[in-house]
Length: 424
Image 1: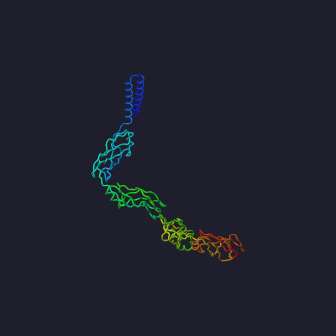
Image 2: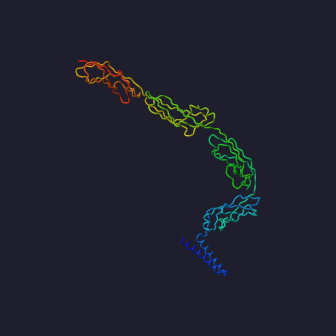
Image 3: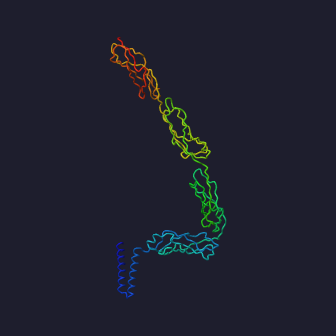
């Protein structure tokens, strides 16, 4: 296709050049010059049509039908077909870009006296290269009614809602009444002229011009009537009834852990909440203590206690979802020191000798988890006195102490034991 188009362009250029040469060579032969130019133009039109052919078809879109020259005492109540499809003829590149805005479809009601009439639809194109071939349907039935008018009240309608804590204090519209005119049956259905005001996210008073919509008693729009004036001045005042403030969360913990255990820490998540309410409600929350939680009982607990609880809010206060907090109470064994009286055991005594210790028991002080220490007895602790290699006489010997895992020796009393060795 591109090769053919190239040939055509070359042909046109050649024809144009030939026409010029012929015109120069036969300046005195006017008819031959005109023939040459006509030949060049014809070739140009032929090539143009081959590259951008004419297309005749219905374009995608519907053109609304407008009633014109409506008698002054009548109004259009309905049309059997409010819009029509249009078949046109246009160059391919123009056809591909057509829209409904390129056309106007009308029915002429000049001289009409009956209340129902069928008329031909006339469609014109605003594009010079577009020819309208036909409209479908080509005729529509128009129903007319007597024109009437009446006064209706203006109503301000809030759409959406302001942020939490804000509410509408008052609304007003100027003027308070407007005139609605049009077909009698439609005008009689109008309950009010409504000014819709969107309050989504609005925190300040509103003062602006708002267009009106005719609505029936069910709130449905009524199309086909005129409102005069079309817009009103709306004054809308907001008031903040509710405020928000951040408070710390104070967990309420009751009871004590089991004997030998202790509370290491108390944590709450989240540690801060935003409370909303009136000024009086917020003032009732103690600023330092903040918001307390429901009770978390840790009585006789031997491990961490984790509870999800509600907040204890004053009446009229609220927080955002989920509205509860998680309290974690860390509980670990308490550490302490216990004293044990342990009988020392002699080892390494040479044959023929006997040993007499200076005292019959040694006081051993251990440190460790209280539950572990409470479970121990003196029998769980080993104190040895090694007299290996010692001869008869008085000696002071160090102590060997073995204790259960998890405990450590703080001290022994005495730190070393006096032992007297003598011959049997």
